[in-house]
Length: 327
Image (cartoon, rainbow, N blue to C red; front, side, top):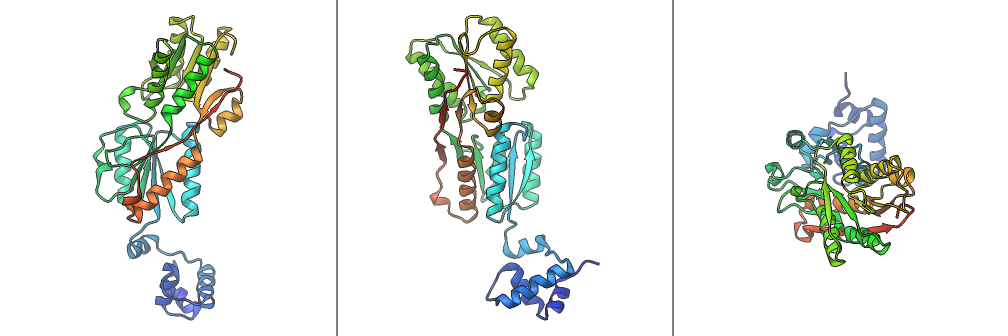
């Protein structure tokens, strides 16, 4: 039979009210009494009822995370930092992998609300989901516009696209192709494409962007990369919207005996620790992933604490250009 709060009180020689005050950190409790209660809890292997406790203090100390995939190095590293930061503040996280499916995202949102999470941090792709519009539900988007009133944290996507494109032009490239996701997503990441096209036109060059579908498999992306080489044998540079796509460009180029960077220059985007370890030669635009996580948690905590007036809707963090061996 599971021990109860009364059992802890009896063993510690205090009242159940005192045990409750220790558990909820309310009122003055001497260190001696606090220690007796904790020692008794440990001896009895007693764990407080978190649901009952959350109803009492009106907080669950749970934060929901909704992202398309944990397998993508960018999301994996971001989630790692989000969980660490939340943990340091006494919060646990519930991780939801939406796989870019609107039905899964809606179901996860309902599940998180049923579990009465204190807030939600989301980097999922689907827009127009009314659950994000629920009044008083703290929500932060990461590189995603979830609703007109939801704060967004992102890297400086326009500056990143500008730096990548200008680097290729400065190195003498003229047939530069960009690979990006679908423009209809209305995500800040589309600013990379906007910057690429602006810089190309400013240098009297013709921009050309290949889009990959939202729910792309590796095979789909590889076929798009093959199509680029087939359609444009004179391409001398490719700016990929993330490092995984850039790695597929490098692989296909080597299969075709195209020398990197002499005949083709390639630059990616993200600069995750995993990519830097496995492909140190790849030039890329590095996002400040830990800083993005820190800012997102800072905003969600402010929302939870009712400090709405100090929150900006757009929160843009600086990027870093890494000019390596592929450019």
